[in-house]
Length: 263
Image 1: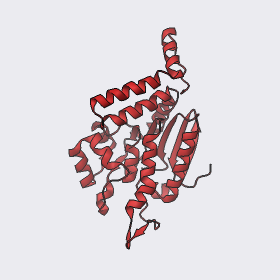
Image 2: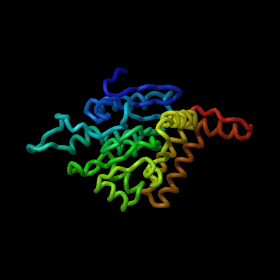
Image 3: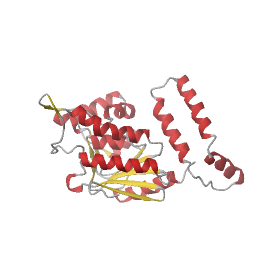
Image 4: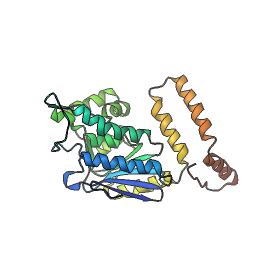
């Protein structure tokens, strides 16, 4: 596939998507969204892809929407931002959250606006020590989108979520780790090494099980205990019928490393 605004590579079961507009801090355009949809279609179809990693080219992860774009729909003489969100951002976030493969965000620099929330919608987030997360929407009179109002209170609690969204103050990678907003803050020079090692480890794991874990954890905050217990029962039934479960038990009994196939 030939892309203009992203790079797409597959190696050792890991599909790496690199947002590639470094001269404008990898801000989103309609073309980028179109290319991301194509990349995720390929990821969904390709059984060899067992983990996804998203990062940015240059000195930023993603600075949010490209405000210089002029193709936002107009309704009653005003820009219809809701239509643009539904067409692009909501589709992207639903795809990432619904993908039954692990998604890692390697945040290599500033992640602002929808870029911050794209990162937070990944299953595991690693960030370079110099990275910052900024809910920049309030600075132009908007609200967090791309799943921001969903992710922030779940990760931070309502008090911090409100303050982060209302002030737009930058959150450093170290602060984000301390607050439980991300998995890990790492030295800048080690980010891609650690992220790639983690992605390869997940890709070599029981990826059917990882997808079921993702589904179960994602449902837990909206379920009652009884609903969650029922879901665990149902998903464990599915997991228990996989080849990876059979291999995992055999490897345990034979005292050898398991060789998972993701099936």
